[in-house]
Image 1 (cartoon, rainbow, N blue to C red):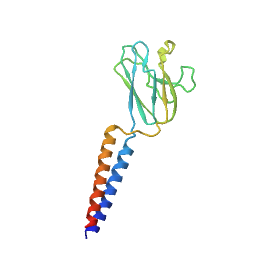
Image 2 (image 1 turned 180 degrees about the vertical axis):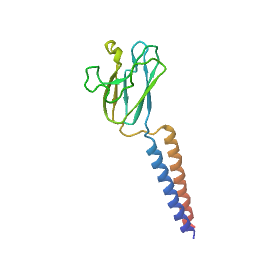
Image 3 (image 1 turned 30 degrees about the horizontal axis):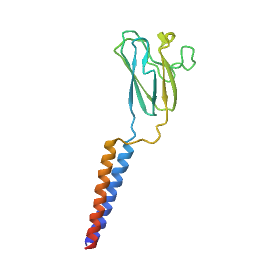
Image 4 (image 1 turned 120 degrees about the vertical axis):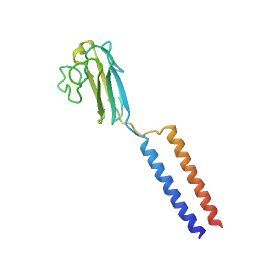
Length: 160
């Protein structure tokens, strides 16, 4: 009876440890949100940003001058505004949001201020392997420790 109970406990412990481990490591990679300030002084800050596929960039207007965010290298770019376009230039308060799902380099500019070099670039690169946060590692360690204690405990039952 006790050996049957220990095998049952072992199977449940192994299932729980495996399920929690998969959930923790699988949830470690999640989309991030980045903010780019639009203006003042006819600038984007930061002007260059590196993100991963699925990440979102929020452009937030901070100055009184009217600005916009248009994909492309300038008004002569045949692909101007194809990827994203915030619309006509407006002043703060305004935000514009775009989620980048494809790997690549995405140039953008402000149509009324491109001559003042108000340009930016978003580099979307493969994120590779996600590294879990310290909280995730601590929780994973606790779950594995509980699982190991369960194995030890179930082994003690089978000796009786």
